[in-house]
Length: 411
Figure 1 (cartoon, rainbow, N blue to C red):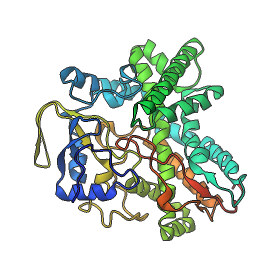
Figure 2: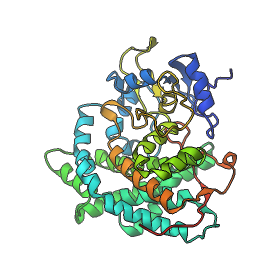
Figure 3: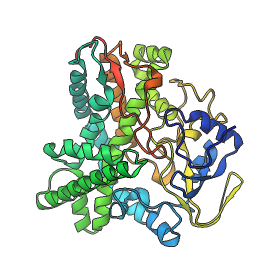
């Protein structure tokens, strides 16, 4: 075995799953060194991962961790000013922040978005069809990215004219930074995004609207106060989480379906299976392969392994989702599988936007598969590259070249 416990995250991004399987065979928890040189503990078994995700001794408070020990991973871009959101704090701060945002993601409000999401999907797929049945189309830039990005922009109240530069900035900000030149480009994009979000807050404070940013500003000025840092951090986190992971779900899931033609044919024959299929696609190729930052506030034992106080803990959702002890033939996409993946996390930090991501996935896949019954890859599978994201927290395709084939009209 050639296990890359050094520089964990700098593995084969196009196919990390054989490595994940090797690591699982060696045990549930391992000491690793991250690609940036920091030491960490890696959790890879399903049961251990589920327990760790719900363990209050594993803190999410980045600022407290850095104040305690400068050996933990520092904040990435945009920096500390945008690092005080619900994914980076513990109760009671987490409880307060999540409560302020939760109303926007209630089942009733998400269901109310269904007609608008369907309209956005139809418009985007009209543009795909306009390339002609034999045209080569990048499904990421034409469909997978703009669908969730448009929805989250509308929820937050981002003006139409700001969406293209903001989207370009986010793409550049979230790109890998393997060298100083790449980091400089990401930093420039980060500065652009920061300036635009600050201007958005200033505009909504002066002229409130029926949108989530205005609601958060109002909450900040009321009894449930948000600090300026919490306000900006929350908006940034909602913007990123609200589009990037769903874009990867749509891209990764489309590739998985095309690689399993029998499953795809059965799904086309029975579209009522779309919701179950989306859950399996989330398990099979998780858009978030590792959980976000955690550290042990005290010595913790996970699956019989002792982790010292102050240690950073990384939970591999993608590895856990393919645990042979939990799933039969986990390296195959089986659309009839019982949904029990960890791709949305578990416990108090379970993804707040999961209902919205599911809605967009259901409508997106159902409409894409119905309108393009002969959709196929425009390149060999080996020519696809999962080079969007950092290899740890984000995994997605920057491009997905497809040939749409003949298009059916809107329903």
